[in-house]
Length: 84
Image (tube, rainbow, N blue to C red; front, side):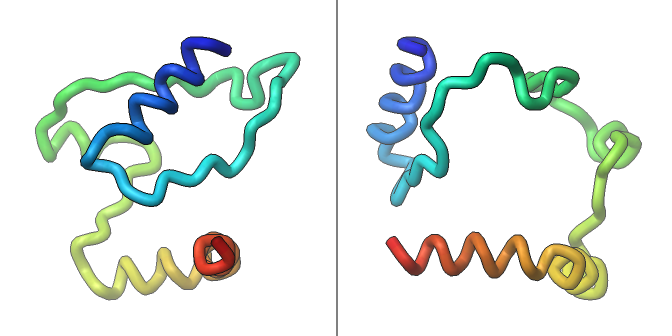
């Protein structure tokens, strides 16, 4: 837990970040997303486009479709932000 708290402190105090909000702060007995791993690797555009779940958002039509599909989630996030 100390590692996570230190990382959060680093993020909060980094001048590149503003209005950092912790949405949840609780201990878990086990990983919620046990098959999901974080990492970083530089990829070419061609490699990135081959990744599962890649969504091309360069066109307005695609972005509108994404927003329509996730309208309720985006509204919840916006309402939460404005309630702060």
